[in-house]
Image (tube, rainbow, N blue to C red; front, side):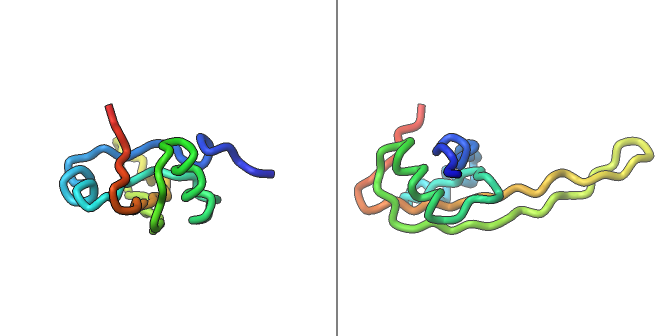
Length: 94
């Protein structure tokens, strides 16, 4: 069963660090589904944003320990993808 592109790409990450270091080099940071591979991420970005993808790097950010009163818990792990676009390509963000 294949997933739709909107199930693969959860959201784009728009932080100060991602806009300062990644976007000038043609790279964008996304939250993605943990079960998806690099090929599925590449196809989803190309379909949603209508750009050509050069490379995809993925990593899993481990959850952090948090404490609320006397309870200790952990935030969930999330999978992120750094997508490099081909030369001259750009994602138009509003």
